[in-house]
Length: 142
Image (cartoon, rainbow, N blue to C red; front, side, top):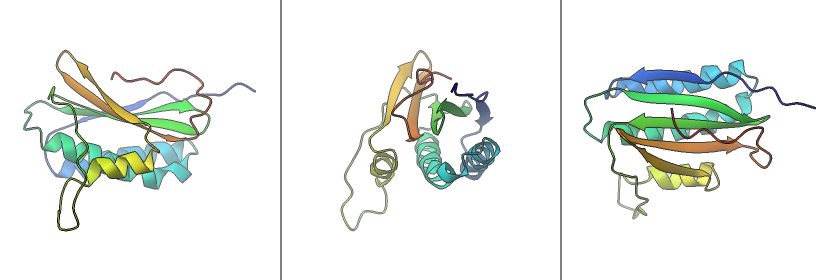
């Protein structure tokens, strides 16, 4: 049986706090529209962390958030920002109020996330769902 993949959902947002909620809404609405609502909660949490990290880059351009279907029950959420600084996982201590984002992304994606530099910044991506048999290669660039 052939897998039907959807066209990606893509939006650009300014580097402002309200962009986190807008990006979450994009992801939630897209996944529910694709019949992948079971992935929405984890995908929203991942989106929150990736967009929040992009907010801290100090970039003045727009960030781009995208959702790609990469398998029958799998998606990729990606955030492109204008910084060429790659993310670094820092293990938070009990008293730390920040630095918990990427470990959470790692946990929710079972380690299926990463980042790639491009000429004008980077793309941080995360795969959610059953990615054992992808219907097409993962899309890292936006």
